[in-house]
Length: 260
Image (cartoon, rainbow, N blue to C red; front, side, top):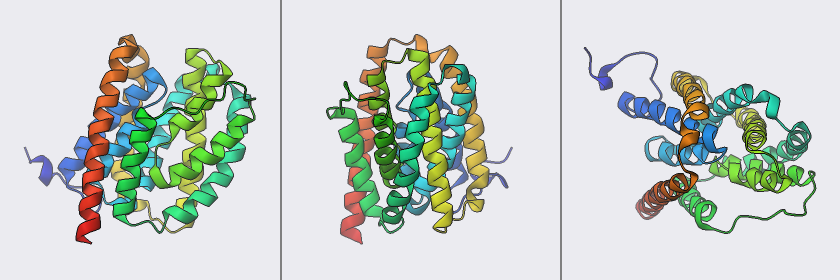
């Protein structure tokens, strides 16, 4: 039996050991299960972990493709519950947000991405969520613009769209399904823009496919098993893990900044 670090072929992403890539495949399963059960959280957790091991220039584009696959699977499983008017309004804003965000993201140094992502995660986890209690569904267009623009830089901005969706008063299954479709749209636009800006996805294809496959299995597991966990326990654990990951990103970002 060869060691994990010696396995050839499929997991050959540049700048990463095969061991690190196998761990990311397992993480993709777990974070997709989290998103399937609760509608939010998995994408942010995934990019925080990916940022610990992946070259920064590839972080947001590769995360976008993996999340596209994960959200496509979740949307397919829950397709009959999607609120299509809300999803379509989101698409309108997402198209513009991808263009504006891509123009900024392509030139950011690694230290800025790690520091920004760490601070962004802390704000999303501990800050006061935006309120849209009286917003019409067209607020989804604004959510699409802001969430997709920031997603080009920080990768995971599902809670922004989720804050608007929660104000619409959707049932739990409709919320999770519509959140999956809006996130899928956001990542599709993001991938197109990064491709136009010159990012080459081919060297990362093996890792991406493996993470998408494990993520789909995680989606099936999440819809059947993980939702039984008491939500208060999940929220506490999620905040703790995300705070630790954000702290690690801030430390690495400061180290990058002072050693540059």
